[in-house]
Structure formats: structure tokens, C-alpha cells
Amino acid sequence: MKMEQKNPKRNLTDIIVFSLSIVAFIIAVHQTIYYGFGYAYWIYMISIALLLYLQIRKAKKKQEESQPKLNRRAKRFMDRNG
Image 1 (cartoon, rainbow, N blue to C red):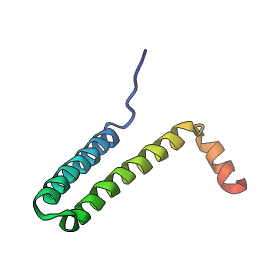
Image 2: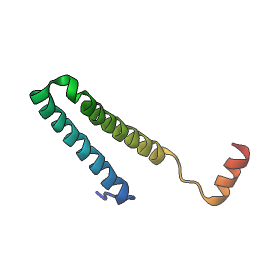
Image 3: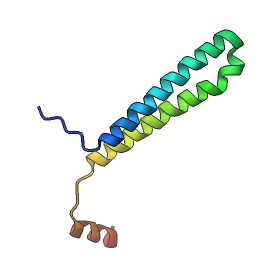
Image 4: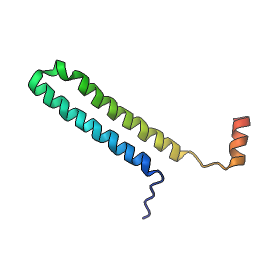
């Protein structure tokens, strides 16, 4: 089975965003234990926002993969008539 990675930069970005989300969550849990939820709320929101951003990137990537690849002539036709 051939596994292709077309854009390794995009994959690296996904890993970095996921890691930052996990780190933010761990910091938020630590702050909640020591100072309470009110002080750590904003860190939880950052963690959730990063996870949502990752989901949006994955959905966009999946949508791009499902679209057929068009050559230059077909793209021009779609731009004019589509």
C-alpha cells in the first residue's frame, strides 16, 4: 500500500497545532488546580480554539482531495462559465 504525503509542511503544521493545544490544556489544568477555574478559563479557550482550527484544516484538506484535478484549459473554462 502506497502512502503519499503531498505536503509535508501542512502535516508538520498540524502536528505543531495539536501539540500546542495539548500543552495549553495541560497548563490550564495546572492553573485550575492551583488558582481555580476562573484564572485558567482563557487558557482552556485557547486549547479549544486550536483544536477547532485543526478540525477546520482537516475538513478543508479532505474537501480539496475530493475535488477533481483540473488542467489549465478546464480551469479557464470553469472560471468563465462556472
